[in-house]
Length: 517
Image: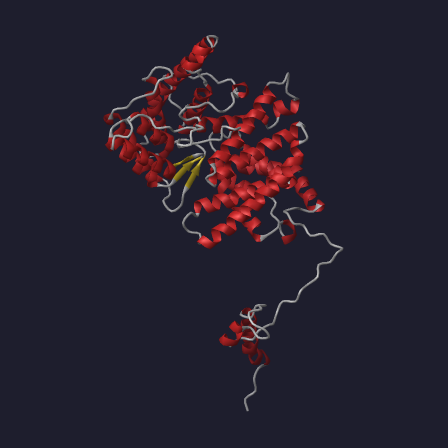
């Protein structure tokens, strides 16, 4: 009789026991023996016992942290040594690397008590790893989101619920077409729950008019705009944008700002709202948003026209500021001037502002041309982007103030070639969400400005190429809208004029809003 080693003698039974338990979940398919276990030859563990919750303990139903954990986080963020290490590490990184590093530096929950579910942890992680980079743009001066959210998320459940919902919505947007239909409802319900909890924390904050609370309301408003946009609820996104801009407008009309408002987050928040307004009003059909020029910083000198830019980033920053100034111009309509002759003075003032912006652009144009001679990076995405924006600005220059531009087919083909190159450079494996109106509004503009049907067909094709979304401008939605417009033009139901793009209260426009607000 061969003796068996104690270790070997128990190795297989132990492994078998582990396998048995791995395939023997608590279940109740059929009593007293589980049907699945009986047919598969597994041992059924029976049924999960009903456990009574202790009445002495309070269950946390929302993401929260203990007082001790919050205290540790605050101490860590307030520690000069920690702050110095963060600044030193981020100072040598690119903006994208900074955002990813910031996500790693944020205190992470280590127990299930700090978050409601695994989904919350998953989508918080997605937000800091991917979404934060998408919502940070050249308008985001000083990396506002990078330095603001780490502090707010520790103290404010409003912000935590908001960015969890936003992270989930962004993940669903990028995974479009890859999620099982039965799971879409599940994820949408999760997003709705997070949004509802965020609103429940927002309501009591709105009743307190302290400066810190006003800033918190505006930050949550920005997050809600991004959330609604990613879900395709453009009318809801516009409602949040209009509300936030009205609040900023009311604050600017007060006699004076408090020191906290003047030096805190408010000016940076106002810049972000102006930028979003600039994207929405890309076609200037209807100025539904408030005038926030009071928050605009004095622009630095345009520089030497004969001096090239040090980098393409600097050239883009200067052009971005010009775009904001151009978007702020609100010229009274001719019909309004006929009713009120006093508006003629306002029109003349806006004309002067317009002329000043154009003069600054001409200097930018010369500097960029000099930059092109030095760098000539013809296959660089940023360079092609600047070339497209330059061409669209030059289109504006060729027309009189307050008139629709027109393009000939020969002017359109080179532009469309550059845009196609840029689209091919973007990832094809997932959808792109951006907070810059770089490609979709220019394509819509080319469609409207050129009456040639072959040009219009190609713009529609390019709008579908990468399923791109630039805030409220969705490439696929724009393609469907313009394709229907083109069919009507080809059969003679309408003239090949500019379609109703929006934002308009007209339900037949591409971008609609609720005129009840």
